[in-house]
Amino acid sequence: MAKNIITVDDSASVRQMVSFTLKGAGYEVMEACDGKDALAKLSAGSKADMVITDLNMPNMNGIELIKALRANPAYKFVPIVLLTTESQDSKKQEGKAAGATGWIVKPFKPDQLLSVIKKVLG
Image 1 (tube, rainbow, N blue to C red):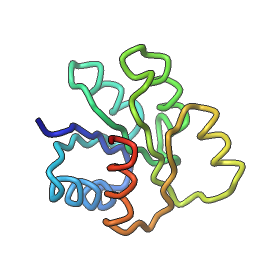
Image 2 (cartoon, rainbow, N blue to C red):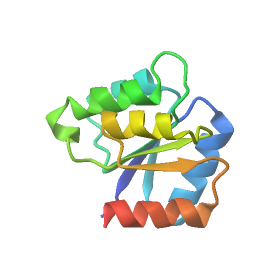
Image 3 (cartoon, one colour):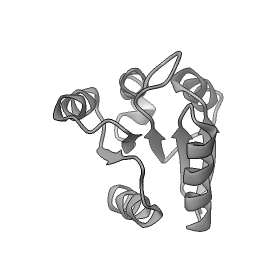
């Protein structure tokens, strides 16, 4: 059965690119426009095997989303990767402290994204 990945980004073009890359590699993909949208979709019964989220988004940012997901027993060990333009160490530390599994800096190469996914999904 294909792994289900949710991609969370306020940019429709980034969501489309991530989605296109993942679907091409055989993954099921859900899309959300911000952290609140992602939580609503995930609490509505959809289960994700992995979360790829942007850091800077309206309503609920990536760090807040990670903290909310990590507080839910169903998502305690689900891999969460931040896909963001931010590359400062302080931001990476904040992401790690919140429970992020990995970090990819935009713009990303599809091969790079897939290699990180394979690494964390096993």
